[in-house]
Amino acid sequence: IREDVSTPRRTKEIIQRYGFSFKKSLGQNFLIDQNILGKIVAAAGLDASKGALEIGPGIGALTEKLAQEAGQVAAVEIDQRLLPILREVLEPYPHVHVIHGDVLKLDLQALFAAEFTGVSGVSVVANLPYYVTTPILMKLLEEKLPLEHIVVMIQKEVAERMAASPGGKDYGSLSIAVQYYSVPELVCTVPHSVFIPQPNVESAVIRLSVRKEPPVSVEDEAFFFEVVHAAFAQRRKTISNNLKSRFFPGEGRERLEQLLAEAGIIPSRRAETLDLAEFAGLSNTLLQAGL
Ligand code: SAM
Image (cartoon, rainbow, N blue to C red; front, side, top):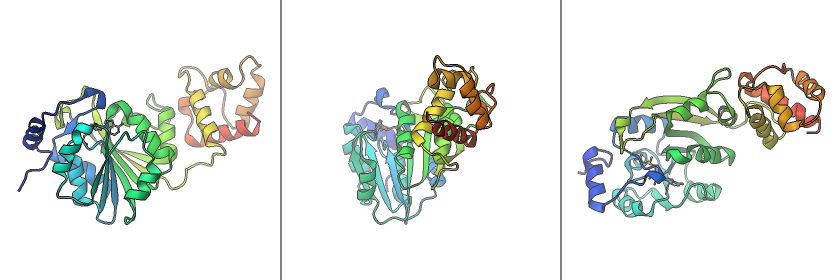
């Protein structure tokens, strides 16, 4: 019987035998800790009726655990050098399909239709490459894929921003975007020692439970996010000053302040104090005013 891929001994053996060298530019930090892998997989609530999509399987440490829990597993890996390793390691699991590609360029709707036919729900489970965490998560959320959970290892600081409530320094447009599509929950923080090689930043596991419907009613999503970004353009400025630069340049302030009043927002507030419902109300008001 073979040891798990993620034991330090087997990981080192595989890396040596294939002459694999880590590419920092691809965010390659592999997991070598059973306990953390167990926590990640448990947070996804998988069973044989469920599917799992992994992004960046590496040498298959997490993929192996997913294969033991889920009914179908698809794993997208960009680094061609890992494909022969994955073929060997995942050979005992015919319900795992490795796809060579860049997850940011893949047609995920088509991937879901092709890979997850016989399952009752799909979750994304991954130890993400940190250089592209936000684009990957925003793609998963914005494409409105039929997902149950997204359980990912990411930079701790990014996890805190995603889960932040109004009022603090971590709360910003990323918090609003993530919370519009999902309910975030910090699962655990993770020491550097669980990775090989060890990353320079602190890490955490976060679970996003994907919402079936947004929690607030927004008439035009693209405009809503435009308003949110404009409101946070310069964090120390008031909402009124930030929105004026973006939507009423050169004009008097009166009309903007009238619209803010209509939306129930005092012009001297800062964006970081507005919750999701207030941003939704504000963007609907501005939209109705013809902006
Ligand atoms: N899942 C493995 C583990 O936990 O040990 C490896 C995680 S490592 C942090 C990130 C993985 O994502 C690497 O294998 C890397 O090659 C892959 N990767 C990086 N950018 C990618 C992209 N755009 N699309 C797909 N995979 C990517």
